[in-house]
Amino acid sequence: MYSMLSEKKQILRCILEKLEEDYALLLRAARASHAAATERENVPDSKYETLALEASYIAQGQANRAAEIRLALEAYRQLELRPFSTNVPIRLTALVELEDEQGRRQRVFIGPAAGGLKLRLNDEGTEVTVVTPESPFAQQLLGLRCGDNLELPSGGRLLQYEVVAVV
Image (cartoon, rainbow, N blue to C red; front, side, top):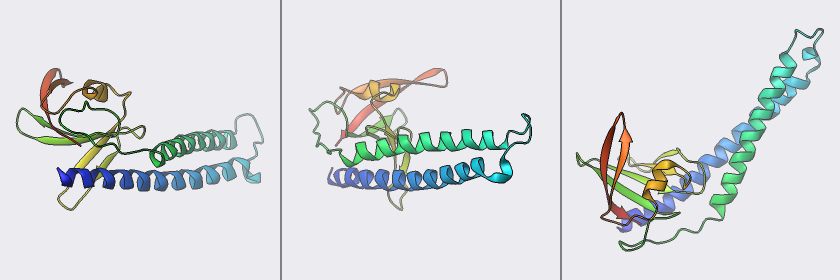
């Protein structure tokens, strides 16, 4: 159980690093797109020349995504990792290990943002997927405890999972 607890701290560090990288990249891209949109060479000579307009749309989209990432960074920087035990219901900051019918295990971290982010934690390839409380998957997990079962649709059938650990 200790290894999962240390993984939880590592997960938070990895999420922050990834979001910071993505934020910096998007800011650079937004600046480059903005520069292209305002470049003297791209000023349209007719209503059919839309290069500057297209570049401005791209710059705005990148700036919007950067703002979303900035908010996610703020949420994770303020996040307090809570400890869980077998009797505590799953909620925000839980690291949950699930086992399917074939004995395959997967880990998910319930975070405030950046849902869908996949992290590799070590050389053995331990993977953790970040899910947010708004996601249908996390909504099925919230409130469950270690030992509880859940069913998730996949490819037209229901897969059975057991919550085998919560930290």
